[in-house]
Structure formats: C-alpha cells, structure tokens
Length: 277
Ligand code: ADP
Image 1: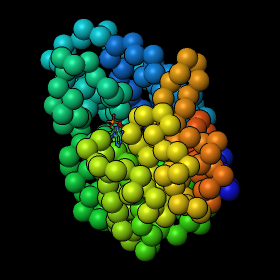
Image 2: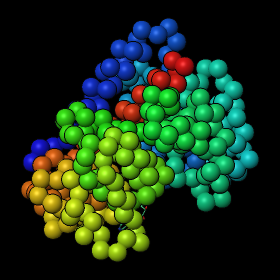
Image 3: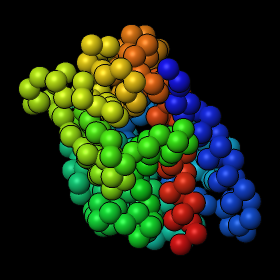
C-alpha cells in the first residue's frame, strides 16, 4: 500500500501558484462568504485563508449572521461581482435552509466563480473539454491531479463513485468518464453497495458516512479515494475504514491529509485562473 499524499501535492501546487502570483502586479483576491457559524464551515474558511496567504493570494472573509436574508446575500454577491478588486468569489456551503442555494450560486458572476458551481461553468466543464472551461470543480479536479501525480492510469479502469452530490459525486464521475474510465455511480438508494464497490479498480467515496467502506467491500489492489469528512469530537474521519482497507488497497488517501488539502489548492488554482482572465 502507498499513500496518495494530498498534503504534499497541495504544497507543490501552492508553491507553483505562488510563483505565478509573484509575477503579477496585481495580486488575486478571493472573497469568501460565510453565512452563520457552522463550526466545520468556519474551519474550512479559515484553512482556505491560510492557504491563500501561503500562495500570495489576498483573501477576504465576509462573515454574515445565520439569519441573513436571501435578498441581503444576493445584494452582497452582486456587490462583489461588480468590485473590480475581487478576482473570485466563494460562498461556503451549506447555506441556512431559508436561503435558496441554487439562486445564490446562479447569482455569482461565472467569471468569478471560484468553485465552478455556476451552471455556465459546470456545463462547460461537463461538455468534456476541460481546456474550454476556465475553472474546474475543486474536489474532483484535485482527485484527478492526485491520481496523475502518482501516475495512476485512469483510462480503461472501472471507477466506482459512491455519492452523487453536485459538489463531488457527479462531477468526479464526469471527470473520470472524460479520462476514459468506465464509471458506475452508487448512492443511498443503491442496493447491495458492496457488490459494486468490490468491482472497483478506482473507488471514490463521498457519502459522508464514517466506516461506510470496510475491507470486505474492496478488491485487492484497488485505488481508494476517501472524500469523507466526518467530525468526531476534534478528530476527522473519512468514509473508509482506513486501518483495514489500507492493507488491501494499492493506493489510498489518508484522512486528513488526502483529498482535503488538494481541494483547497485547486480552489486557489481556480482563483489564479480567474484573476488572469
Ligand atoms: P458531499 O457534498 O460531500 O458529496 P452530500 O451529503 O451532499 O455530500 O451527499 C452524500 C451522498 O452520499 C449522496 O449522494 C448520498 O446518496 C450518498 N450516500 C449517503 N449515504 C450512503 C450510503 N449508505 N450508501 C451509499 N451512498 C450513500
């Protein structure tokens, strides 16, 4: 078993971005909008800010109270859209229930959409031409970068994706499909999940359920990507039972230190791309 070291790759990406940023007169500016005080979201935003600093990107965090109205949030995003000093905008999800997430995402100027969530960007991305879209969904793109870093071949492999969210499951399936994998997407309504996961050459798990994947559900030699982030007290666990599965996998991402840091690095990569356009 070998680790797919996301922390190391993130460091490499950040160093490269730092070089790119240092050549520019105007530093990229990432505006992060956080509504409410969800502890996990606060931690993510803080970490993104720290990564920005390392890359020489200026980050601004707008912290809004949980009862902020949708109208108010739309007005704030509109202001950021118009602000010439802001290169990229990121709205931390999840949003409080009284706010329509789709409406908010669609209000972000596609040219400032750091998360590649706007339908225009997401659509371009799905149309298979990655060069054509300016940005890419951070987690899926990070996963593919991680596989490439370790020279894992994707073409011709059977990839099983567990989870079908718009942020991870769907776009990662799309990206793997674009790279020539045969892709099966499983989710909470899948019957006999293990029958599918056991077929995986590449297994990507993004279900948000600790220990969902145990050793008996994994083929020997499989490549296992754990996107899960499950908070237990102060500790973080993935969706994969790392202890047992790592004995069977050929490559596996640790949690923390796997997909997480690469995701943030790719968010900054998007930010720099948007600043250059
Ligand atoms: P994320 O944004 O991290 O992908 P979400 O909570 O939006 O997380 O989505 C979780 C996904 O995981 C959903 O698509 C859901 O169908 C899937 N899922 C949840 N529980 C299970 C399970 N027990 N088996 C398979 N898939 C699951």
